[in-house]
Amino acid sequence: MLVQLWNVMAPVLIVIGLGFCWGRSRVPYASEFVTRAVMNIGAPCLVVSAISQADISGEGFAQVAIAASVVLAGTALLGAIVIRLMGGDLRALLSPIVFPNTGNMGLPLCLFAFGEEGLALAVAFFMVQMTTLMTFGVALMSRSGTGLWATLRGLLQQPLIHAIAIALIMLASDVQLPVWVDSTLKLLGDFTIPLMLLTLGVSLSTLSTTGWWRSMGLSLLRIVGGLAFAWLAVTWMGMSGPARNVVLLQAIMPAAVFNYLLALKYDREPAAVAGIVVASTVMALVAVPLLLAILI
Image (cartoon, rainbow, N blue to C red):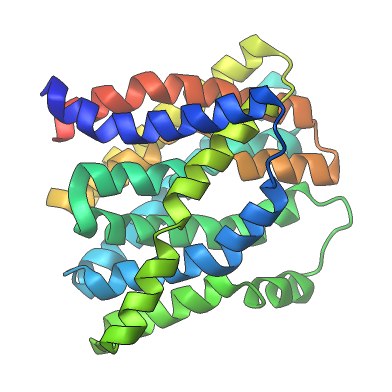
């Protein structure tokens, strides 16, 4: 069991650790370029490639997507109540509770724990979260009151959304890509996960945090609340096997670094949001192995 856990966790922790050391060494790291390359090329190719190569049904994919929606909605409601009771800024603090790191950290963990099928199913959770983050998340933190049409227009310009549409069409129609297209997509998609992990490590090394006790409490809400709603969703839907395991694992991921970037952009308590990102990542390093010990 310990060997299995180490085989899953070690690659992720080592690459994040390399990124963290890189950030601390003050050697320049082109985070903006890497992020653009990942979001505009790597992640879209990874989404289509994962769906193309995995043997999953449209029903299983849809179940994970619905469960992801339940987790996001549930944690949003719970987070809003707790933040209001604390007297905190809802627009600043809700996003890191609702949106976990299902990309940088969740995708590789699901790949190493559950194989190619796990990666393809994890993409379903990631797709729902990213679509919601780029609409509801941006609208929540924005100070300019971004209009619905402007938000939708910006969303439709994202290559990742185009990839999601292609992946859904492939699932619905059972289309098989030509070998050369599939190989090209896999080649481009394969750089996504290591670069995501490296960038996560670099980002964690540079975050300036504040309010540790509040950060720890809200981080606990992110992980425990996510797991609770995920368990309710998979139980209610009667999910089993890799689909169930992927939903549970993705739901306990720490707060996504993208929450901090939004807080920084819109000046929504970036130091407090950074604290939640860092604290929840530390907590996840304990929670993830414990959950994996049960699932694998």
